[in-house]
Image (cartoon, rainbow, N blue to C red):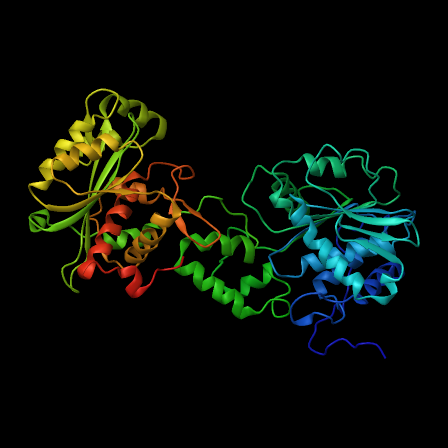
Length: 540
């Protein structure tokens, strides 16, 4: 006896053909059943079900029966394109691999050419590798096959068919006679060239080519994937008609409450089977604690189209420090400075960070900004940022002309040193050599500060942690508040982070200076011992 379906593994019991079946089409249970039977004789390759039969979940079986079982009056598949958009870890790669193998071995297409494609060869290989394992675990398939792992090709000797992963280069793809296409993670496509080459005219010589497109939501709303996403939603809502396009979108809309667990099932039909609810809950908790994770959670877990720009510091977190500052009480106190020098026509920021003297005190942040006077009107017009008002209110200093005069900044620092004990000044090495020499000549301790992950990541994480705990007081300075909302961070493979000016939508100089100043504070706390070592670094 063959392996039986587990009792707790759900099955589609009340199949109804899709609403998009034409009146001139019909459902062929024999053809649908053939596809279902073929796939369910394959084996799972991942997770707790690895090595077990690939019993289709209800949502998967619905797709298979609709795509392969609904045919026109000539007996050909009605749907030419299937667009399946769904959250991560729902088993879409295994479904795609199974579809590719069905097209290769059982679809009845002579000399079938089935292709796997993605943004790059490595991504396209994910589905191929699953298919490869499925063939290896099937005695019936392996004996009729040749697998060329190096070239990512599976050949079916019985009908001279093959499944081939395509490389990313576009120039070699014209002229393909596509009978089947599995296109993985369409959202990662940098443009529409590859999609157009593989779907426009490539299957004209075939009676019923199938383009099986699978993806999670993306971030680029100018992409081919978002175009397909919009088309799918329009068809589902009845705003558009395309009888050859089969739309499947599992995900939340912007109006859905993403905090409500009940809504998570809308994006994850495999929840409870291939996905454990606890894993999603853990990711959700991370998203609540770290805004940098919120968009990742929404995109990957809830299949929501989100912006690629993620605010590092939400308003509600930054505003915890909006407590008035008594500057007179700071006179004579130790502080550490961060100096972010601008290019000649830009903003320069100096931030003084006063460390707490005991457990009852908090860090106090005192910022100063300079901008060339002649550039203010054009900045106000272009960016709609109230630099002119900030100058009048005393939050920004305007220097004469169209460039920053560093001697003016040096003089301000010297004046500040008569009020506060500036222990150190951390400064970006770039463009600062002369100022470093000048200030050192005046007796200041200058600390060149790198802007890479190594130097910036620990204090950036600590800065966010302290803000989240309400342990940095900033007095609601409007310039700093504006800059805090502009911060976007880069992240490397080791989960190090740093603010990036290139990706941030507007100026962040004050925040960068504050992070550098905080670093010097922390490194001198408790007789120069590092708090990073004592209490660890927040991993966000």
